[in-house]
Length: 125
Image 1: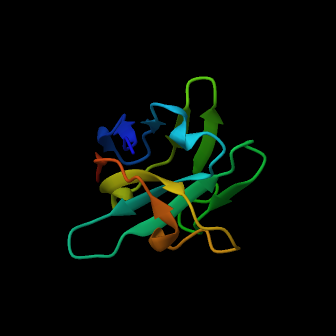
Image 2: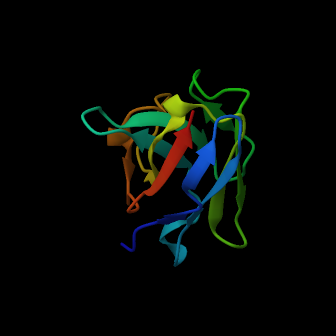
Image 3: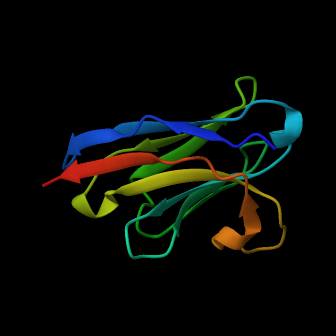
């Protein structure tokens, strides 16, 4: 299937904001929860946030709760991650993916597929 495409990354100072986008093409992603993960070299991919298809359910890691907001526009087939009050420890490559395995576990990368190529976020101190 066609992977997801992330965009919106960049370089920002501590306390700044960025909005990431995750766009899907085609009907293969209709009806699915989508998630954001991030990864730094030498570390495992880390869950950031997820949103159900309806947008009625959202999930956040403790490290971003209160600073990041996930939302979606299903007409555009796009999920967004609004990142505010950014910190140097938010520096990473951010990926989005489609959740294909159910259950209560939203944080394991193994429950997702169709990973995009990622977008780099760098927060300077």
